[in-house]
Amino acid sequence: MDFSLSTEERQIRDTIRSFIEREVMPLEPDVLRNERAGRPGLEPQVVRDLRQKAKSMGFWGINTPEEYGGAALGPLMSAIIAMETGRTFVPFTFGGTADNILYAGNDDQKRRYLIPTIEGERRSCFAITEPGAGSDARSIRTRAVKDGSEWVINGEKTFITGGNEADFVMVFAVTDPDKGADGGVTCFLADRDMGWKSEPIPTMGQWGPASLVFEDVRVPEENILGELGKGFELAMQWIGQGRYMIPARAIGAAERMLQMAVDYAKIRHSMGHPIAEYQAIQWMIADSQVEIEAAKWLTLYAAWRVQQRMDARHASSIAKLNGADMANQVVDRVLQIHGGMGYTKELPIERWYRELRLLRIFEGTDEIQRRTIARNLLKGHARLGTIGE
Image 1 (cartoon, rainbow, N blue to C red):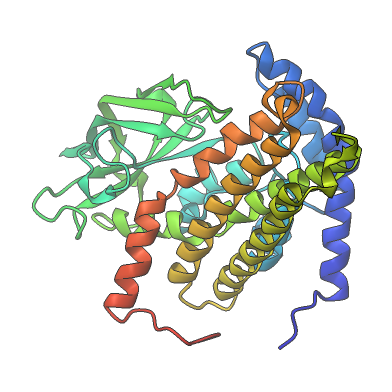
Image 2: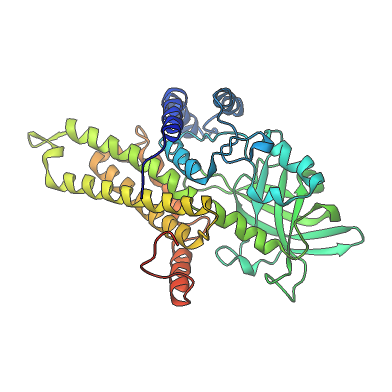
């Protein structure tokens, strides 16, 4: 069993790391300043310029098929790249990507939605969560009723990432109440100019979700994504396929912060000694390193299963649960090591503290992951003592 990266994989990782350190990290003071003033961390044009620089280096559509102009590096390298981009809190991602379920569209839908999204001309959002249906996605109440050649959608979605900026939404609505999630939920592609509205939701971190309201929004029949009544399967595909990417970014942030703690512990003196000499500090550093490494291998294993086209749902739930908890433990220790300075807005630690808390909630709460893991074991869907099966 070989855990080493190939020469090409190491080159990609090192190139990405260099790009992040050279082009992205220097923007961190600007991001902190802008956010303290209530402005977006980065102006859209700055993001576009960064993406064009990355594109000139060949980093465009990291996991997008080559037929659509992407690099198609695969899930494993995508996770490794996410670890590198996670080392900075600057809100930057590589361009040339689109939601995985948009590939389920027909040729006309790909022309109108998928390709423009990959090229950066359109922005999408994924809307399934509702005020009364968060972790329990089967309880969605948004309705779509057929009226001639159109479907009329009524309902509300909440905590929708990118909902304020998107010009179209993949919205999930009940089309057959008797069947519900078992064949009665459909995904629709709805342009903003069809009438849905968005409202920002203030949060404790920099994540800026939206509430979406649908009042008699009319969507043509040809805008059904996939098949009528098969929307819940698409939703689970969207949620499950990239779940391992959440802990991947968390690992990058945790490694960066732990290095900050190591560096600070060497120069901060207390009672005549660097605090790095005290056992309490050493144990926090040691525990953080162990937890980061454990999360890294759980995450890479989940990504590897996806790459091998194996069922990765159980492994992804384990990685997500472990990685989210790890990140919150590490940032808390790093803040403690920095003392009062860690609590100020002069350092980015408190920002990470607020941002990483979200990982235990979105795309499946800790409680849902535990439920999934336990249920898989109790029902025999997963077995103990197996590896690579």
